[in-house]
Image (cartoon, rainbow, N blue to C red):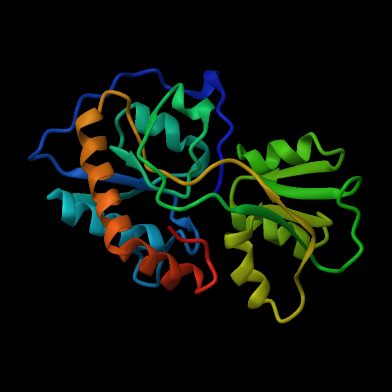
Length: 242
């Protein structure tokens, strides 16, 4: 789960109005972080969070539509009212809680990992790519390695493939299918690193009623096992569950 490092100067400090019951709820996501969220061949938002989010809306009795937004502006555009939720693999952090509210987590805390094109790369003094404005990028910046940042997760992988970076550092859950499908050209190196907390939905701090509806639905899905079923469907039988 990606963890955005917030910059106060980047935030649009606009108060959002509470979502009325008969209003369509706009679900904001990145659409570029499979299997959490991605755009399928039909041009539609797909993935774990699409299926999970649609089920939440059904249980909460809400009409929802999906909105795609770039990661680096996903919180400012929530605050300014371009959509009503963030459901985009976003970890719950104390820093973010100063600006937005979160539901309870719907994905337990996981780990970040390094991927390289060969073993023996220098993770402490080499060049490591990470997506901009993430806790992974912040971790690398403080690790002694040289950080190269890219706007999208795809670009961080491409940097390793084309030799711009010795390794990429990202969520293990994002990297695992890429490594599996690489035919041996990419591999995990070094140790996994636990960062941040679980993943939750972000909402404007003024939208307490809407947050309560989603929290109730998440609690129901945890209790009846349907959330665990979705986690295993999208992340594999060995994934962490509730």
